[in-house]
Length: 462
Image 1 (cartoon, one colour):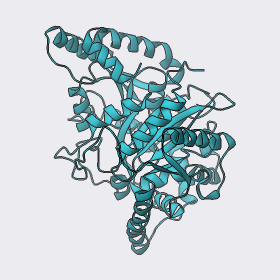
Image 2: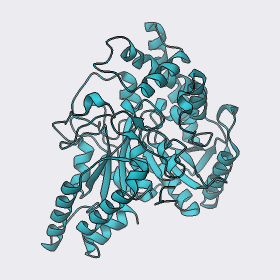
Image 3: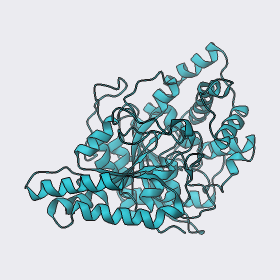
């Protein structure tokens, strides 16, 4: 059952919010020991919030569109009653003074935070493991990574511990874990959802431009519902504006299918997933053409260069107040050794200046092809430890995720949606990339894919 349907039943009296929360707490007890997705469980607080919702309904009061819906909240999104650890032991006691704005918006709509979701230190790996909480397991195959960095929330949603997960996406951190877990995720357009913290810090420019907060869910409709509540300016985050979010899309229905980004190769099950999604869209009335957006390699390369360049100082002596885990440190240094670090001001400034050229080329392309359909990753999720097997492995992963990170570089909206199971019984999926501020267009296309191909979760851990 999806979040919208859960809330409808709570509002109608078919279910109580307390019963919904008790069922999800029981599910956490049953499956979290196997997957390690939830780091902290807010059992008492969740019960209190649920009882308050039931009391309001009994008194004849109106309750919100997420009344009684349990959500998980990533370890780097601020809650006033829980440390925002970012998966780092140094921040284990860092309880913030205010909730993130979009958390307050969801609370006002009746959502109930039931647990924290695990993440790698600072979100620095496409895996979910740290020294503070340990490893989150992929529920489909515990020998494979669950993706990162919002891996805990994706697994919590996939295994039925929460109906919606809250995470963020700097380099695929919502879409990749969703792909691994067989669920959906929306990476909104840049500037649509306020920051994960109201504490203002001098963040690297790439974090300001590439990262955005968004929802994970088992159903596309629930992504739409959550985003409709999360988005919009809050008077605190100067990078966020309010843009209308239409409930339907009546514009040009043309899809550019990118079967093999840059011709670097895709695995057969990935190619099949793209074909299934393309066929679903064609059957739903979309015009489907094979076409690749311009300057894709520029976008992927500059995402890597800028993200590494702006973080490399943190790994020099005295760059951090305490060390990160060995895995996060090793991965970053291996990745940096494979990346051209932009040492001079001319190089660094030139990369940022070139961003508008690439973005303009994509904007022209998407004026004719509003949706770009392609892979989340060009391979299955790797086995545990692959990303730490040497510098070359970091480049292979970046190549696998070339279309994924191009979206971040350009600030575009993208929905990851499952397409079925492969011959090993693992989820397959695609991403549907919309134009800037065309989140509703990406959601409309994803809804059509889901209508044809169905959903895969909740799943019991293997």
